[in-house]
Length: 258
Figure 1 (cartoon, rainbow, N blue to C red):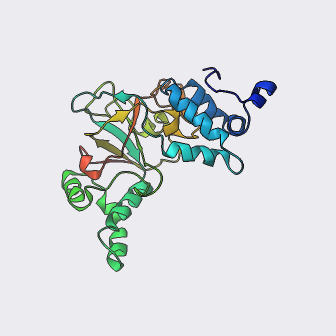
Figure 2 (tube, one colour):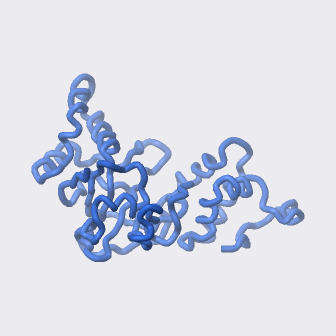
Figure 3 (spheres, helix red, strand yellow):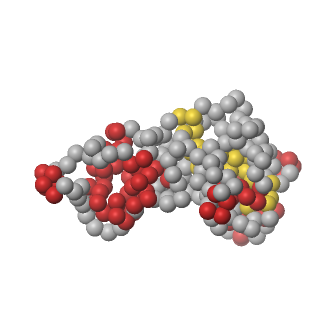
């Protein structure tokens, strides 16, 4: 992608450079800038809006300045048409699950009772149908996002699709223990949960605005496996972004991988 879509000021025309926040971002967030230039899922209007935002940078942290733009430009990529009854997959760490449980419980319970329930969070993992039913009754509307709904961030969620079996996202010929690596996720082992859900709202191809300043992401709609497994799974898996699922959306119990 060329730089032709960036209108230059008179000073920039004279120097041959794109000044201020644009050059700062290109230098300090070089991979994110490369992603931006190569993301064919962005409209020219969106590109120009981002460049205009970067040009407003004066001092401080350029990545943080960019994040302010990303906060209000999530989920603008092409809408993906899922198969009928398609189930999406996601990997969740115990720490994130614990956070979600606490976030859901604090809306219903206060004081010592909350502390007591928090101590048994591990027992709330829905590993069978009975536990899943109970979790949905207790916290069914809790969003599976770490971010507070009232914060500036939308708290988007990333999911993967299975081209071999759209109803069973983890039935993809990849050992469960390799899944974090194929999804490009670090620090998810040794224990994680396999999460499967069916959504009623739109899903999108991710853009660089969804990925933010993540060096472990590339445009194209597929995950970027980590180096340790990239030679075995070079193409990764199809990925989408969307508004967070809730516990009510869970299609089946969560499998624990240790």
